[in-house]
Length: 297
Image (cartoon, rainbow, N blue to C red; front, side, top):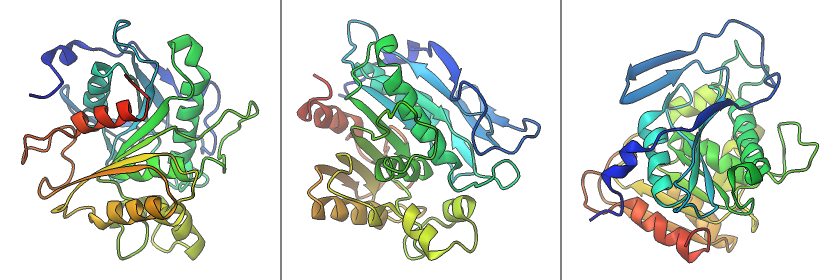
């Protein structure tokens, strides 16, 4: 039996806040053309230019002080906001983890001066905001992680790879390093042999430089200080090659970074919380991994 119950369906966001208190950096002024689609139970967003954080706090009696920023996937062209955002936030609340769903900007030359760094700016700002608001939300600033799905996995990994290269104003020198990462069938690499073409083209364009490819290929940027990471992927994923996770895992091992990985034989791409090909629940593994590392009890 899964550790989650139907009580998680009653969890609601306490509030939605603008990600930036003032002007959004790296933006080209223009009309808000954001599109919300799908159904109330399956929301998608596209053309996002005004990023937000949707905050889900666990019940006080469950709260552990840990927090996680959630980056939904969607090939850097839309956000699977319910399936890989809200539902995941509710699940983490059941573990006593505060969850912050990031509605990040989607790359566009029409709305950004440099579209390649827009999502990373938003993810860095999300880590900064959560860590900076630790006392307000009763969090431990040393237990702030990030999770990303598909292209959101690329974004989460970029946040863990380039925390020492701030793309936002950070005059308080708040640490932008996630304390841990969970990468779900992530688009780790931008190299031709591994990448998901849609994510690649939407983020860095059709003819990126060798320097850009290296910067946005996370398996090439692992160091001994990369955050501890859990990876989940399905072997039969025909959208994002499982080698993305395998290569990143190997890079973590080479650099002696604590790592855990689940490779399911089946499940395809985009299964969110539930891989319907198996009764196994990756969130059960995630709970145990977080306990063993001391982020939750």
